[in-house]
Each structure stands twice: as structure tokens, then as C-alpha cells.
Image (tube, rainbow, N blue to C red):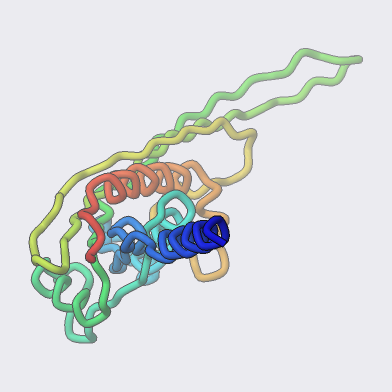
Length: 215
């Protein structure tokens, strides 16, 4: 009987110990980052540039970090170019995000060079080949704000580069030269790949600089 009592007490103590779970930590809660459409300082004239790039960064955030991205937009009276930190934080509070990010495309350029020559003759047949080399550079500026305090966490610039040798054909060499149906094609070009490299670098900085999640 005494043994049975001890066994029952042991089971009760074990159950009680298992039922007391540690409180959730800040790391268990996903941090939400609001991303505004990018401002376009390249004067490309393409109105879809800002939203397209913002969504591309949101995809990068989802793919490579534990942050939860959310696309934000300024009210109709404010352009992306005129959005400041105070307004961005206020919108972030309304949308219940923890961080807000504002980005600007400062530079997007390509350099081209062409070389041509004749291939060796094969059975009396030869062909002229033109090699087009494209080197692309994209520079972005980003500002990250903590919504809870309204403080700016960082303001940084990053640069992405890409180059490609193409046999003839065409490539995107002008930033913003895409429509709703061919943005994917642009991203496959050297200029698009340079943009993605810059966005990947910027995303790493956002993930590294984030404050602890709210309790």
C-alpha cells in the first residue's frame, strides 16, 4: 500500500511538472515589417517601379528571414518620394506592424561593349559572331524605423552588380523599361539581377538590425 501511494505521488508530481510550461519568449512571436513602395530617383517615368520593387523585396524577406512582410501604402495625398519617417511610422502603427522600411532607387545603370569577329572556317563556311557585354549596377538606399519608439534604426546604402556576355539578342539596359506583363523578364536581365542582389543585401541588413520582438 505504501509503495502504491509513493507511485501515485510520483505520477502526480511528474504530471504537475509537465503541466507547467515556460512562458513564451519574444523570439516565438513573428516580427512584422511594413514595406512601402520604393521611391524612384532614376526618373525612369515608370509608375509601377516602386510597387514592383517593394513586392520583390517582400518576397526576399519571406524567403530568407523569419520576418513577416506586409506591403504598406501612403495615403492618396502623399507620394512615395515625399514620405518621411514620421508619416511612415504613423502608418505602421495603424497597420499594426513592428518595423517600417522605406527604400529609394538611387542609381540603375548599364555599361555596354560590343565585340565581333569571324569564327574559324568549317568546310569552307564561316560566320560572323557579335558578343555584347553588359555590366549593370543598382544602388539602393533604405531606412528602417522601429514603430514602437518611432526611432530610426538605420539608414544605409547597398549596391548590386551583375554582368553578362550575350550573343546578339536584346537585354534591358534602361531602368523602368517594363510593363505589367514583362517585369519577370526584366528580373532575368543583368540590370534586374543587379537589383535583386542589392535587395538581398538590404534584406540581410534589415534582418540583422531588427529589435527584439514585442512581448
